[in-house]
Length: 264
Image 1 (cartoon, rainbow, N blue to C red):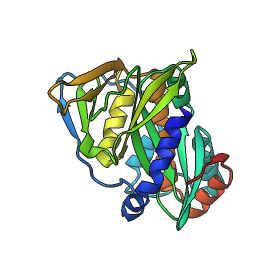
Image 2: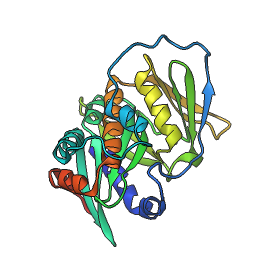
Image 3: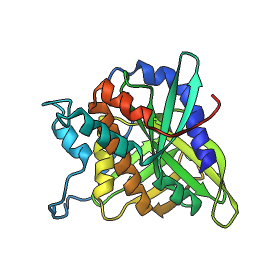
């Protein structure tokens, strides 16, 4: 997983212009398609809403989740504590990249997964959320497409919606073997937020990593690890808590972060 994180951090220098040129918190639009698989909708059950759901509902009413600044700071610190952060400096600034601690458990087992990544450029800028599609297998796929099947929908992301070309590294799993590791990153849009919320709430999610742009297509299907639900929830909660916090609250929360420094 370490190499995968470094690959995601390496992309940061390539994507600085893209991030800083985005004028809104949803990021930039990118090509994606969603296809209805079934009109059947499972019965809804009463459950406690996650912070990101409450914040989205209140977005038009207020940018504050609590009147007490101390409470806001504590909530944001707690959300960010669910991440491992890497820090890097680049020409003109610096940044933190956060990955949910749940993602390490998946990679150590050699399982492919959805990898949410949070980028923070400081209190005065909005956060940026990316979703990574991380394939781990015996051989490289040269993947150009990722399909995600939830209870009711199929979400398809092709190479045109990836931020850059797919990164290839290796992953060392629990048995000591090295596996092929491919990572594609996508800047999250408002539509993606809804897709991720659907993924969290679905009973079963199937991932398909594929190479379709060839006369000899190759694809691998697998069930999404349960840890992904926790990782995505962590990322959405931290994203919206940070987005809706004041600069002062953000600064206090960032001052409390532990991180590993990496070379740019």
